[in-house]
Image 1 (cartoon, one colour):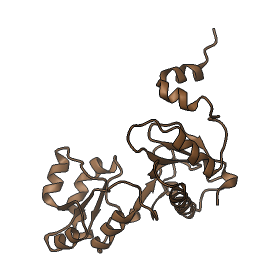
Image 2 (tube, one colour):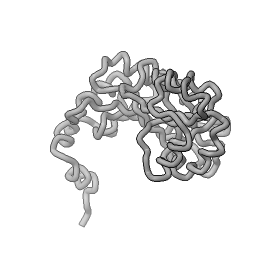
Image 3 (cartoon, helix red, strand yellow):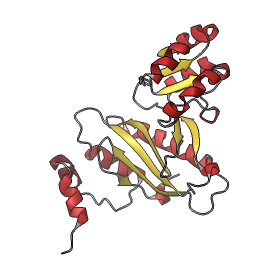
Image 4 (cartoon, one colour):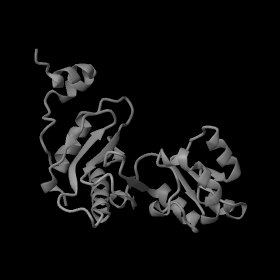
Length: 239
């Protein structure tokens, strides 16, 4: 007996998912403009879903130097309020608070995180606090939350860094499978804003290409809405 696994997987999806995807070729590559239209069409959430960027990179996972990690300031932000934890000594607390960090301190937050608290999206730290934060590496590192100089989250100018993340600066990094996944806007947004954010991230990702990678850099790129299907992009239409 031959099983149609594609059919089985579709049966596991909800009725809304099947309804919005029945007229879409999920194997076809679309232009960016077409893909954004389809992402909006296939969004089934009652809330304003996130437009998600997904890329599969042609990197050797056994070579640490090929891991891609950097930051980029999206011109229109992500559409969500980024909660920032600032690890600072007492002398820098005022600067961090003035820059609108959501949580400011050091020892008390090291203790809270050790007890399981993770109520923030980005952690920034001054260099002098890193010895105390190092003990959190296993907890924060596994979740991509550990302050890191490469990500610009270990900085002497903590106020400027906080302001940048509040205005739309985001970190992107490869996961354990060589993928990049990041929100670039909201389904309700005007297409132009999503396109500008996409192009900014795309160019930053190209610039972050490790020199040791030969041949194709991005195996695939797609967009999706929150819990929606992935819409593949035609790389020949990207700038």
